[in-house]
Image (tube, one colour):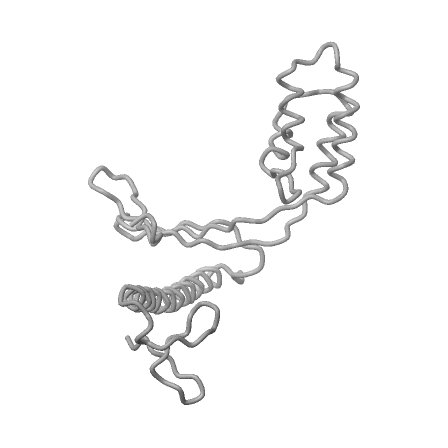
Length: 207
């Protein structure tokens, strides 16, 4: 790869990180080699990104085509709100999963729920366990970005508490849930000799 740059017809220079043109003969050989190595590797990564992007578009198109045909056979149209889908090859050796992960947030009713729960804790002060108090307080902790942990908030609904005010708080949590986005993931699996499906990883770090 050519490490020299041209700026308004000037050649024989390399541009540094501050935008200055440095004569090539003033640049150390190790710096030239580093520059060349980084550019070559990153260019390969960019090319691979384009290949993966095309691959993703192709398999998504193939998948939608099949699902649309399958739905049509039963008088239905594929689209709209989609759930998770699993498809297996005829011999069972290959599998693909289409997973839809929804992004949730809570509106102002979450604060109403917290107020109701705070009242419950106050009333239970003598009879409630410190573990339960810690669990509830931890659920409403916010991170450095000011957001709550969705899983912890939703986990409160699994607590078997019959207090009417607690139930109203859980109702407020349910009503406060807002779906603000969804991301689709397509995962691939191949069955091994033990009959277990092993993922075909396309994660760069996992290979």
